Image (cartoon, rainbow, N blue to C red):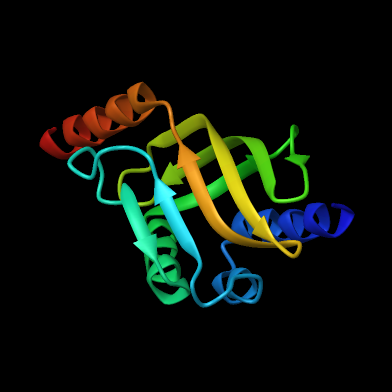
Amino acid sequence: MHETRTILGDIYDAWRDQDLDRLASYLPDDFCHTINFPTDLHHAGGSYAGKQAVLARWQQVFSEFDCEQLETPNLMVDRNHAAAEVSVHCRHRATGLPFATIKAHFWTVESGWPVRLNEYYDVGDIQAFVSAVAERASA
């Protein structure tokens, strides 16, 4: 479990730095990632299978948002799973608008390494942000 905690800590450090190469070094080729909100709300929602597809999604998100803060104060790890409360503060590059939320990460782990990540956001936070971006674009 200590190894898994270290690996996930390294992944969060790489995510904070928006370092896709470092993120890729921790993921198996068949890694799966699901962001649990509707794709009609934001294009980043839905499920992606395979490391390259996941990295392409993260590249798109990283190009859209600048990560100003990412904290994981409550990372819990057991043999095959891990969970984290993730506090995120980002800035939308195109508009300069801030986006802050707390999301939940649920990891599936095999032999100490992550193989799947499910992310849950407060959909209200996403809706408010998308509305603010639309208002800014129409102004």
